[in-house]
Length: 282
Image 1 (cartoon, rainbow, N blue to C red):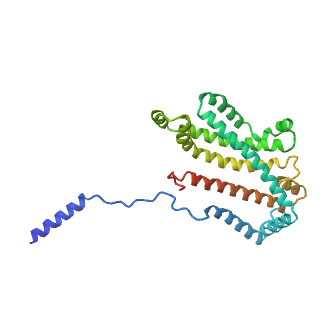
Image 2 (image 1 turned 135 degrees about the vertical axis):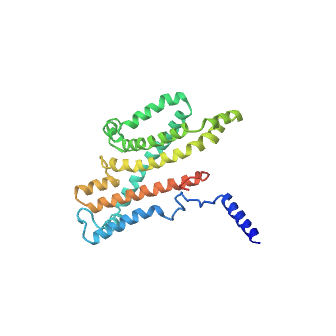
Image 3 (image 1 turned 90 degrees about the horizontal axis):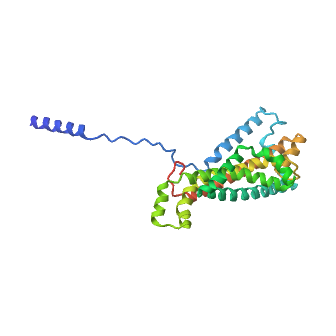
């Protein structure tokens, strides 16, 4: 009986040694997306701003308290100044963005799908990228005058460059095996673009689109301070002349809200369109 027990113990130990240990898988992904996570940073910044103002750590003449900025914004909205300036800025940004978006997509497709197009377009666009866009303002004023046209043109340039660069890079990065497969399957040019080119270029396009949206607002801040009679930038420039820091902060907050909302909208569309991708962000 003792010998049987010893044998069973020996077999159990032997089996235990031969059985591979099941290691617990370490989780490396960021985890589940938190609701309204992108608002956490701005809310924290606002809370610190309010706490510092309430404690008297900030000079009210330089950085007014949040409640002062809210009262100023409400006053500007009531007297009709803020709605008019917001509408003017939105029109400028939307027009320039639409032109830059179309130009960036068309140039990227022409350059990415044709060696001749790449030879004619890619070097020119990269040369344009190397020149500071805001440095073109004096030249565009001479060409187009000091009205709305040059402002829209500068915004379009600011927008089309990142859209072109990222879309062209995505097109160039499409695996050539997919192209060979399309040739073997006998796909037409249109089917090739729809089934291979567009899905392959969309990730890069959305990166460029987000950069273009942000660039349109950044360019607008500068352009609306040059011979403008309306717009958020004009409002801030006039407030600077009279030392109204609360009005300047109202303009900055509006610009920030527009930038955050537009970027969030692009992110939402990107997640919907590229829902087939398995990425860390998803």
